[in-house]
Image (tube, rainbow, N blue to C red; front, side, top):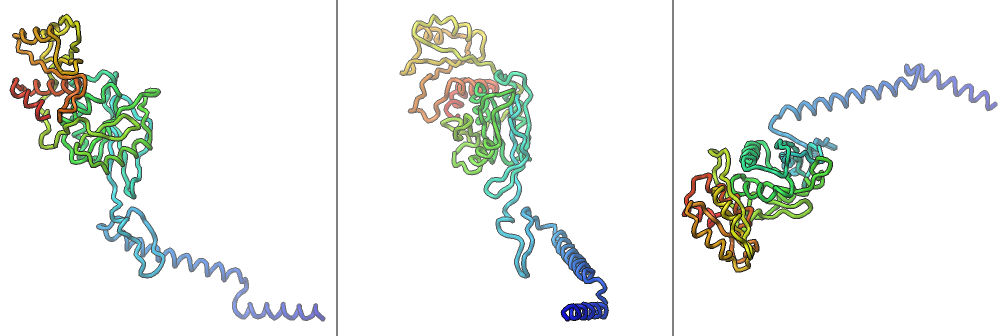
Length: 336
């Protein structure tokens, strides 16, 4: 009896499906699913066409609407525009090739350039001018710059840029060691220093740090953009020697330096800042007119614009190359 009932039910279901033109019920579901996909595709095409038709709107976050009346753009998306960072290395490449990074919901493209020199620890004064020129040419297409150099040349390069390179944005000069012919600078370091550049409240536009340390002003007297020294007419700097004075100095090195240099930086190790009697006699008998600048090896915290021996050498080299006389040289060391 049960078997007969099942047969009758099966026949009835078959007649019902045939009457509804459902020869294969799965065809209905396939047909319905196909129609849904076509409708969705058409709606997506309309939406994409609507988006792309307005060229004044750029949304870098590309989100989809989830319901009627819900906007797909936010204030965050509108400000999430792309900026660019130049990583400019001296001689060696850096140990990263990442082309982009995101910082505080803002995208940055990362560009790389290199100053070609065989010995990164032996920059000449002509190299300083060429590096400044190259960085200056890249400022128009990059919002920020990180210069990577060796520890031995960092102070000279950063101070020279502090004197000459004008920039509305801050520039970092980072010194680091060299491993396997590459600077030990990785993605996290680049992100770290870019973050410091974008948030720094330091007064100077050229900042410096040894890798792993925080950025700081290059000198105690950062140079403002309006006071930068124009070097567009210079091919090289004047030759200036650094000579150390000390107890028992016979003065022979100082005499030789005066006869072979355009200027002298005489460094005294005396805490009072005074030079030895021998050095004083040589300076007073210097009839060649070679300028001698006396600086202390010990930083004088009483001076608002103390110059290290290296900084003094760069500044005097630059002043002499610009044709400064003694009175003007005094102004250079007072102003800068």
